[in-house]
Length: 248
Image (tube, rainbow, N blue to C red):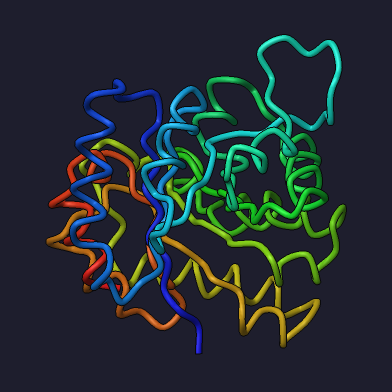
């Protein structure tokens, strides 16, 4: 039986004061969550959040990681640094990294491996644009993004990783894939994994990301292949985030 995971991606938001308040609010209700809870603050606040989460069950993740272990890579942060700061998870391949920073599926796969080599659990993000969906290419696009990682890391790597389907057209737009639309893609992704290992596919968590709110979380999470959510905007309000966690 797969346990649900609800991950909050705070993106480039927050201040020291607002994050202190947000974490306190999350901790006040996270203990009763049926889902595992993960928060991913900006890099500069990782130490602050790690200290605040100490002794709790809420997990800490980062929003990105370098493929490099160390060296002259100004602005990059390595997997070992994230681990030292208390992270157990890291997002890789988020659509904003792919679209805004031009990250290819090959680079995302390298980041996945770099994270896993340091014992971090990657939350591997895949998703299609509106144009790709309207052209009927959703399955082809998300399968290519997923298989790039499987080809480099191997299927067994997904035993210690999480997959997240985030339709780009539903991120921050208020639009949400219907539960049935999301389930269809999640099932396709699990089938991609099952073609390599039925066992791994069966145990693999697949999160849905794309304008998830307390009002639609329960319907989404009730789908057979949806194992929680990767939450953006709603994760910046403790009450909304906990409402989503409660649906897990």
